[in-house]
Amino acid sequence: MAANVNVALERVQSIGRDVVAALPNVLIALVVLLGFWLLARAARSLVERVWGSREGNLGRLFGRLASGSILTLGVLVAITIVFPSVTPASLFSLLGVGGVAIGFAFRDILQNLLAGILILVTRPFRIGDQIVVDSAEGTVEDIQVRATIIRTYDNLQVVIPNTQLFTGKVTVKTAYEVRRLQYDVGIGYSDDIGAAKRVIEETLAGLKLIRQDPAPEVLVVDLAESSVNLRVRWWIDPPRRKDALDSQDEVLQKVKEALLAHGIDLPFPTRQVLWHDQTEESDGDRERQREGWPAGRAQAPRPRWRVPGPGPGDEDAP
Image (cartoon, rainbow, N blue to C red; front, side, top):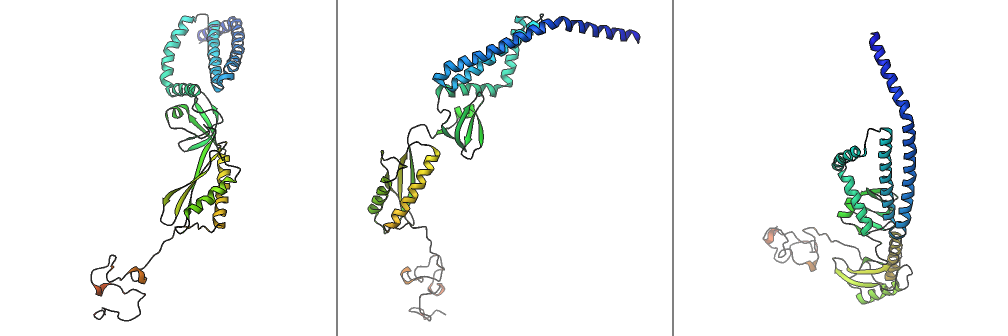
């Protein structure tokens, strides 16, 4: 028992001596690591300053990559200082094997990283653009290494992987300086189409929230069940969501007021429902116009518009 205790004490003392002997190396490694950290910050700032003036977000991404690479190198140097038996060759061989394993383990992260770089290089959209991706719509706030951050119009944050943005469909609503909006307005079949178009065009010409060049236009697009549909089209500048809603609010309000002021109807869908024995004289004789009833006069229901009592040809009817 005493022998075992002595062996344990000797091992503890040996470990203590090794730790004390390694303290200078640890202190040197910490200083070296601090130097690499300062160098990484300086490199990041330099890359962002050089690239940022030309490429914006691409400079920030490359700055992060440069900073991460320098810090990784600093950690490796610090390890070789603390553990002299570890050589650079063994570190690089370890990194080679570990790199393959990390590549398989973090394949999605690497794909998103590459997609983020390609997005920043090709620039299909930029920070501040308003885009639509699947069911998400909002303003691009940041393009990071792994994902892109979107702020919706309801002040919600949506994180979208870069691979989805690079390979999928993205609608950029602020890609151009102007944007066209449209809305369908229905008028009655008895109304003068030319007069309605002139009223709408004159109304749009006096609005300040829409562009007059290109000029607004009104087109007939449909002869619907209850109305003749006119498509009102106009342009806005700038093409942001708020400007689109403000202009649409003004256009619809002024167009409705102008059409009603000129006696032009704005009909709504109507339906006429008749029972099988309910009709008007102009609808025809139910004895001949059966509409799904069995053949034969005696089985046809008597229209309600007729005077009570047997009618012509109904002598045999009960």
